[in-house]
Amino acid sequence: PQQQVRMAHQQVWAALEVALRVPCLYIIDAIFNSYPDSSQSRFCIVLQIFLRLLGIFVSSIVLILSQRSLFKFYMYSSAFLLAATSVLVNYYASLHIDFYGAYNTSAFGIELLPRKGPSLWMALIVLQLTFGIGYVTLLQIHSIYSQLIILDLLVPVIGLITELPLHIRETLVFTSSLILTLNTVLVLALRTRFK
Image (cartoon, rainbow, N blue to C red; front, side, top):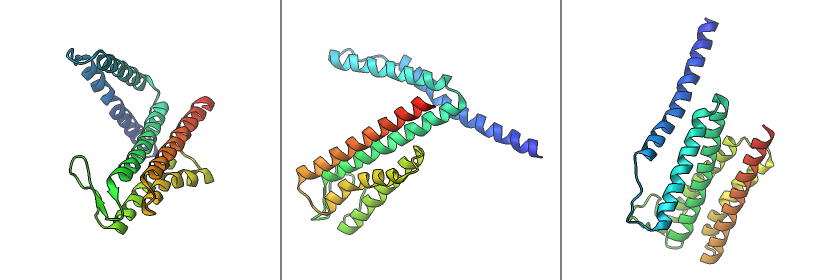
């Protein structure tokens, strides 16, 4: 029975590994089967070619990684996406939400957050806490430094709640995103250097 459990465990890990590698094959296939639009400017064509080469490079690396490295790659990528999403939410909130009137607007006319001021504050705080905890957990930061990172994500929301002027809120968002970016680069550099 113990060997059957071990075999089932290995089969689950193998299935997960295949599920994580298969999208790369589809990405490479899509890149090779699409062609740049010749009516665009030269800069756009060069940018498209660069992005395609980058996509092929990253997808090829994912295909040849070992199982342990593959899971780490997806863990770090997910942490990076959480950080980027947190920065975009802070940026969106500082540009499109008026806490004084408790009114939020969107470029597409979609309202995802509540209209009442306190509910809006709480929604943003819970959202940023979720992003921060996920980011810290995925990067496995186990120190007081993790609490500072989460506080860094909450500082722009505090600027919104206290109704600071727009230029100060934009500065807070920029500073917060810069700190988060430098932290991500530093953690990834240290993890890849020592392992």
